[in-house]
Length: 273
Image 1 (tube, rainbow, N blue to C red):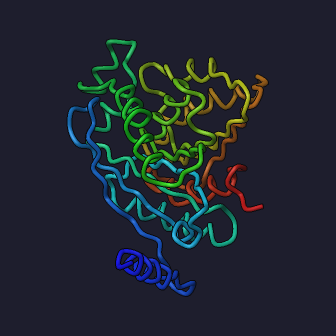
Image 2 (tube, one colour):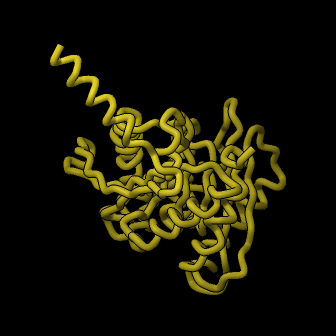
């Protein structure tokens, strides 16, 4: 009898802790995940939207953000998602990938020795990061959070290069990708060959690509971008959306400012119905 009374009061206490609709419950947390592939703990940033707490039966899409070691970038993307999800897009869980060595983690293995003159070793560990995401981060998320089987990706510069490479290795992981000034010039443009061979089996995949002009990075990367954009115009690609927009921004770092919100507003799978 005493046990019943105790359980009753515990239940009453839980029900009394109701969600206040006038409060904002969105939160960001830092999580450290043991990684066998990196042989160390790896840090990720996780943002849970307000709706995650107010709609306890709802599952959410995941937005993977690369270069989340830069807290300002993570905050900017988080703020954009928060603002746009008020009226235009679905609220999403954001998973920020904290990268310790961008050249190693974002770049695939080089095919040309000459590449090492520009990119000093260690490089070529992109497959390690892919394995970490698929086999260590994704299972952790499924076990601890209410998530849909639907992933979006956003990357800038080498982060965008990695995101595109990930898609060519596994065409099923991401439903849509926002590529901000990707470096497709890397290793004698090996990514262009990979993209041309990229095949989508069933579900439509979306790619929204943005770049600027003017500085050294943009001028160099745009040469390769023009080639692949021209190829897409000439070749029919089934179940694949590839849209490119040249932004009026004369600085590599400023591409985040327009590319993020424009990309999010284009992704079909996250628009509010």
